[in-house]
Length: 392
Picture 1 (cartoon, rainbow, N blue to C red):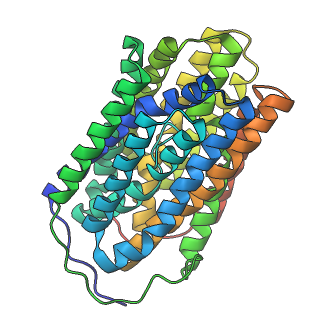
Picture 2: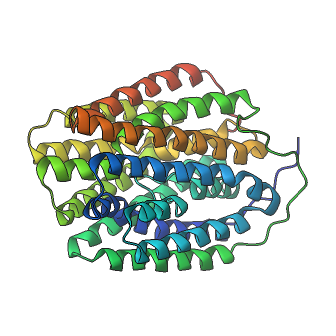
Picture 3: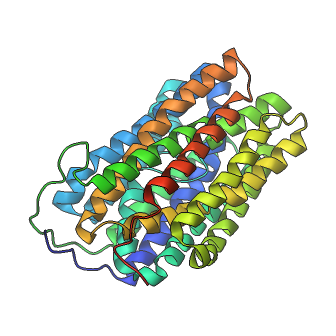
């Protein structure tokens, strides 16, 4: 076993928080804007679903692609490279009127199309936080990390209500990418120790393989109800305008942020795994009910109720993952699980787009809710007797 890397400082965590804030602020408006912008550029419903899939495919490719750079050059250099790609993506969005070039930009810029961030930034940053934080405080710090992300995304969604142009919003994304480059440049240069390579696509650890497989089921279900597709559904089904959608997703992000602060309190009472499963199962009931709602206010209320509960598993899942593996397995665990989640999530939006066109606009809510419920039962059954490698 290789010796663990030196722990990171609280300054590093603060820098990660700043980058997270800037990045997710942009994701807050981009996730709502992109499907409608693509539709305005002439893309069909099936094309919009495919574009969400391609964006997630891009995120998966980037997540897999950072394995070697992180290993050879460290977190700082890898994060700088990712920020540079975001800069390129912003320039493409600003200058192109071809919808497929806009999709390409979203792919290389790792633009989030859901209510929570996935992809390479998350894979690296959660490990930095885990090493900087003792076990007993880790769930709380990860909750704050995700809270900042959701709060910033809520603010990003809210500015849509002011009626900014797409060009202005893409310009803000460009500025945010520059800020990330500056922030990541301030991270310390790491000493990279020689160690065994991470291996192939499939992790060597049975624990990582199992949990990555289960996470992929949850993510496959989540791909049916990404924020972009929910925004498209509310727009097509109930005629909600971009400004109204901005308010709805502002409220959803605020509720998600609140749930992240409640998660550590519940986890201290019933444990990380039980918190993950119980809150997630109830949220899936709300999700399925949206499909049968005939009124816009009821559908929105159910969606907001779902957001209040469904995100409690985010920091608890991250803390649980970091606690069941050895320290020198953390990069592999974070990248492998994020990759598994992103790959499977990339498949379902194109299916959802086809189902919305061929069957019913609301069908993805049922598909997503049922699949995510299967994940909840399965992960509790498989991991309920697995001991944590750390305890507080």
